[in-house]
Length: 521
Ligand code: NAP
Image (cartoon, rainbow, N blue to C red):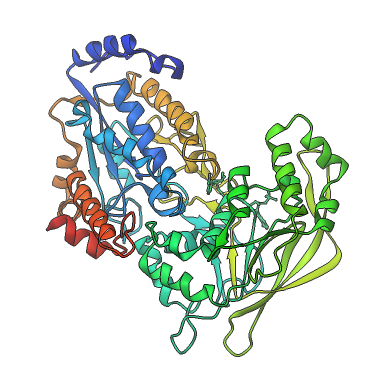
């Protein structure tokens, strides 16, 4: 049906001349390679960019379950980090580029999955595209493993909390939920927040809760969450960030700790407090070895030492506590309304060789008052369809260089690919997706080059075929949001932000209904 493409490896991908010759050789064949990408976060956009750059016969349809794109950039990155969010400009350019005009489409408000409530099935995409790339990230949580963590109120995962304050339509119910509102419908008073886990997401949550409202009000944080933060800051005294291992093994990065330690609220510094005994306990011989030749970690240790040396200003009523070597063992709820009241933690010590040290419980226990518990122990990916070779131990898709690996023969072998958190697990910054996307791109191109892969005539449109297959799928596409409609929503959000007092970066729509209404207006 078509001749094999050249094999492309990442270093060659950037070669303009190679690209040119590849383009012309492929165009002559008169065939296209339509590819569906599920998800529209950073991993999806980087993969889209590299695929379109490499091969002019590749056409891409991005499917997103929400009307608006950008995934973690819009709903995960903290609102007070607009410089990180500005990567969406790069993503917009991919759509605006003239060379991509007829090769790239966006279908928002279409969910892919296998169960009845989902809108389009993965198998139907696999049947009508040359390849399908899974890029839907991680939208579930790990548990602490405590008996009542799902039964009592006031216990949220950082993912839920972050999605809520960033305006994700599926998390806006939290504002009126028992977690934040009491039985009389009033916002709960919150004096002490405890965050389990000490990665950058934990730091984001702590900073947002303690941040000066004047600064926060200018960001794209939602109106409702800003009101909540304003209300809780009256009583809020402490946010405790809890690491199960020592400070040497902490997961936050230096920039985020520095920013936290410089936080002020109403011109008062908010001290970041370390406990010297915990720093001492964590500095085992193995920890010292972990620091050898590890310049970035050593710099974090220097910063911790500097912060720990500063004595907190006596006038400060609020503080952020960085606690280490503690693991939660019991969540204690108020017997009258079953809302969290305090948390019991076991003291740990470190055991094991350098870089493999684990937390081991020792006798002591600590109890902390807690009005809101945020579990920030990592995001978790889930499978959206049983035909995905999903590894339940790693919560990622089994793959080789981005190609899904099936245990037994599957008709979808060489058709299903993966990129982003679903491929490598929930770690890394936005830029980590660049290398990841390059690898998946290279594998996709190499695979569709195989004579077994499907290519289609130039005028083939997978959407037409899918729509023709059933009335339901026709309906699905009639409700979808296209790229020019995304631009409309974007424009209205920016204008709404301009009209706020003080001006905000944007005022997001927090419901699908509002977004669809603007899109279709
Ligand atoms: P993370 O960095 O992997 O941190 C997870 C934390 O949870 C670790 O402290 C881990 O401790 C702890 N943990 C895991 N299981 C636990 C358990 N059962 N009990 C107690 N603690 C437990 O994850 P994240 O904070 O969700 O961040 C995800 C990624 O996004 C990271 O790569 C992060 O750097 C990135 N991110 C970056 C920024 C930024 O650049 N500003 C902002 C947000 C997120 P152990 O080490 O002991 O397992």
